Length: 126
Length: 126
DNA sequence: CGGTATCCGCTTAGATACTG
DNA sequence: CAGTATCTAAGCGGATACCG
Image 1 (tube, helix red, strand yellow):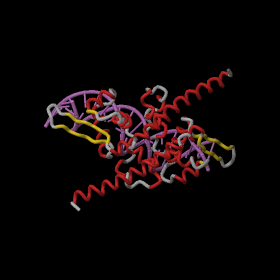
Image 2: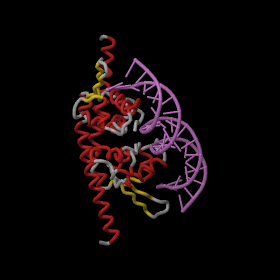
Image 3: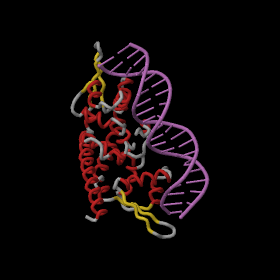
Image 4: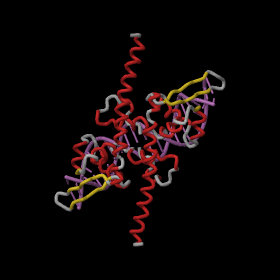
């Protein structure tokens, strides 16, 4: 979900939460950020870590994260070329939030399963 | 961003964060949830609170939140009809996270503005 | 190795009209 | 009042091919 990236500055005060989604809402961005929270990595390493993402999408998502100031891109003028991605300080500030999203997501899945189980029991009368 | 709602159960362990986006990532969901964090509200009140959302989208987003167990829908058999939406207990558990998203969003916007200002100064040499 | 360019389909979401 | 149905445009994202 891109949510009109250009308008972050123009967004009203009351939608600060929307800003977060506009920045991490891309399909692969949370995965990328989580991987970079582990340390600096090369483009190829990111690809291997996310085998199902296409090269095009990985590049685009990284560029957007870079434009948003969350990820830095360092090109080493070598042959063959080497490009390393790392979190910026701003990117690091997402660590706590991502951790809490992870915790809530984990809780929610267990919650839903338990709920489904209860519903099943209620339906069968057991 | 819907991120294939049906597959929440099937998602791998490592993407608990994705689960959160699959649930609150809809274009108007955070706004809806924030409004319902203030208390129970009727459909029309939600519309007034979000003047730019179309009726169709509001209905759809509410249905998805309901399907995800975050929002309850109560229909009062009156004429004219009255429908009230409220957070479920599961929905309430998002309060902290939404609060933190708000805080981070607010910080991020100030951070970006300060950054843009610094870049401007650097560019003009002042 | 780490990209870009092009094409195309699917989903998302807006506008509008109608209904119990 | 609180929806549903239909049509449509835009954009997100996948597949593929080519490049420095």
